[in-house]
Image (cartoon, rainbow, N blue to C red; front, side, top):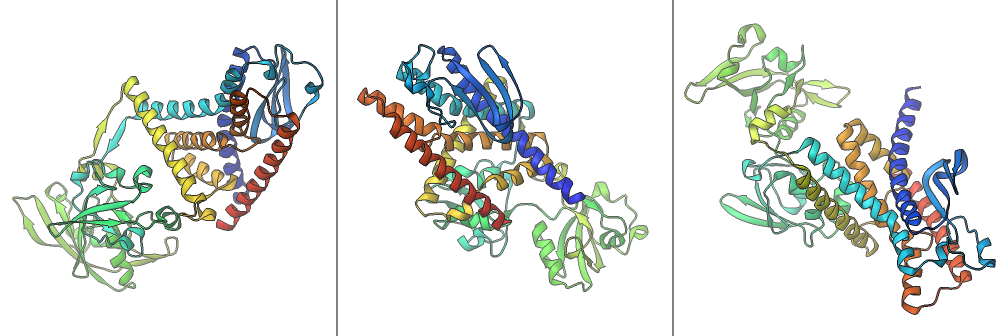
Length: 475
């Protein structure tokens, strides 16, 4: 039962996202067709069979049972329906084929344009509604680098301070793995280490390697600050409290959260000496009543006390590792640690930021496709179909409305880019025919267009089927 509900939730959020994208895309075609006085016979969200429909004026508006796309049927146009009955009669003023080439080009590209505008609108709305929180890179003095991660293989090590990415000074720490930086040619990271600046270059297939990695680049600045303590846990028994900072485990210094968990796994459940710092403001906690922790040093000028206790990590079946029973630092602790800054956007600034972000992601998607089709990155590992879209959309929805709508914006850009590719049956294929007609002043024969349209449909169906099976194999 629970598994079935989980599957339904994936399907639900996928349908919600697709319906928004398809509606906006087809609305672009529809509005400009109407603007140029073309007759629109049908406006459909989803493909047949029809669930519900209503004819208003000359147009039937309907919802289909197959929510993987949609279409606008314009009189006098070769489209997905392969309807060529109109060809036997003379062009009529309301038909697509009777309009000037420039008008037809606008109608064909309007869906792609509307998808781009949707992305700009979503990004701008998120900026306006939520503003932006960011960590100044200068406030991150060092990072943890996981072994066997892409960053470690590049040459980075724990304790490095990152100063530049792909030749540009790092201003905001979040920009470290920004897509435009990852796709730079070459992708480089410059660090400060022992008073020297060193630059490390990523492998040519960095995108593929990141896709294989469960931890991204493998770089984390998260300190060993305690955000929460589980009641009755090993940490609770020892007297560790929220706001403490672990500084040593088993006599070895610790600075980062991942470093702390690494040391715990090496213990194999054996007792360890744990040292932690506690600020003056938290020293009202009575040590004796909360566990065996003892104060071994106090710095009254700095307002810091160092405590120590012997702790035995416990095995967690759910986490499949040894744990102390503590949670990582919450946003408030991280904000105080790194001096998180907040920026609000007025409507004009938000639109500019939304357009900039849309352009960056559009360029990144185009570059990614180029890397895949030239063999620089692995095709199978970097291409996803409807199953991957369902997975990412559901995960985004679980993280909240802002993350979900951000995913919708990214999907909208992807849909726009894919649709404008010069493949028959896609908007880009129709555009190629129209450009040819505009240059030669001669319309391609109906037989040629129909043949290429059918070939394009077959290619797309084969490609989509491949992506579905590829997605399943990657699960």
